[in-house]
Length: 143
Image (tube, rainbow, N blue to C red; front, side, top):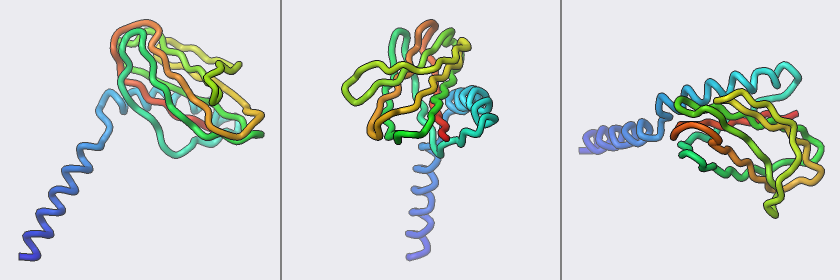
């Protein structure tokens, strides 16, 4: 009886783990984001563990809250999949004010670099500027 229960629980846990896996489109979007972030690792930036994936609709955006530390430098890199033609990344402070960042733009890939003067919560916006609904992935690096 215990063995059946154990096997049933293992099946349920395995099914749950499978449902949390990234889709093929999200994996491709993450690959695109990592291609961009690789340039920053050459400059001494370290990739942060974790990533955010999702779907963007035309003229829509995703907003991700991040905690940043004063004195560090950050690059937020995003990749998308077809049919995205152009995406953008912007950083906002906790009041919603758009911050000045360095930008990289490459159609289905983009990045924004930023060095906060104050530690705290910030918001990263990923925008689908041109194209149809697409999967995206955001990763960031710091030094």
